[in-house]
Amino acid sequence: MKKMQLIDESFLDKCKQRFLDLCEKKVPWGSLTMMKDISLSKKGAVGEHLYYKVQDFVYDSVLFEYCRHPTILDYIECFTGPDIMAIHTMLINKPPDSGSLTSRHPLHQDLHYFPFRPANRIVCAWTAMEDITPENGCLVVLPGSHKGKLLQHDYPEWENGVNKMYHGVRGFDDHPIMELSMTKGDTVFFHPILIHGSGPNRTQGFRKAISCHYSCAEMEFIDIQGTSQENIAKEIEEVTKRRGLELNFQDFWKFRSRLVRGQQAVK
Ligand SMILES: O=C(O)CCC(=O)C(=O)O
Image 1 (cartoon, helix red, strand yellow):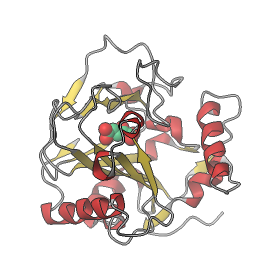
Image 2 (image 1 turned 60 degrees about the vertical axis):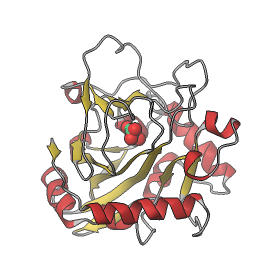
Image 3 (image 1 turned 120 degrees about the vertical axis):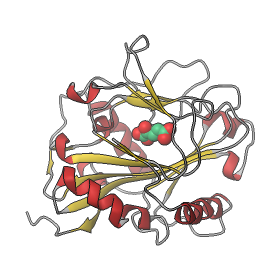
Image 4 (image 1 turned 90 degrees about the horizontal axis):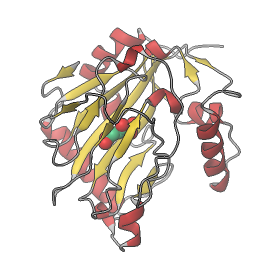
């Protein structure tokens, strides 16, 4: 499903300015996570040319307004029901690719990252913050793949390396894909089993999008031991530990979620 110009351009410009202020450290990062592109980092890039993502903005006064946007939530509610948690928040900046193709995002299913269910009551909203085309790295999706199962994900074997946490599925290189060209403000909503990714940014400009994954507030956390999700759980637990937090995979997600509509589930 794609909704044309769902989000007002002036709001997206405010989000962009917030991202630029974060890149330039004009505002404190607090609990936000700023992620660097590996090849641009090696080339000494700084600011907007270096950071490809800010995550975990449920306590950022500017960016969190995206998660609470009433029009977005009206659509989200169709999937989650009335009690809604914002779970995973990202503003994804794709700086011009350095030639190493690390600005690609491998094909993956978002459920790989989530230790909660049911999958049918998790949904992503992803909004183009500028015009997005195949040239600057639009989303690509495998139509119908949301009806499949959660697959094994691993780091792709890319010649010039791959950004942190960019796990991907294998064996879909010859599968028909759909490129989602979008204009500023357009929003797509998609299922966490949908196989998707994005291409490199071959232009000299940036490609920004803002997204939030939502879940019904009464989601159930699951034990992922013995499943294909063990690798991502281990990696996330190691990264959190390096930051001085002793959180398991499930608590990591509880920690970064926030109620956006309705009532918090009491368990
Ligand atoms: O914005 C992109 O390029 C892809 C984002 C994405 O698929 C994700 O972070 O799960």
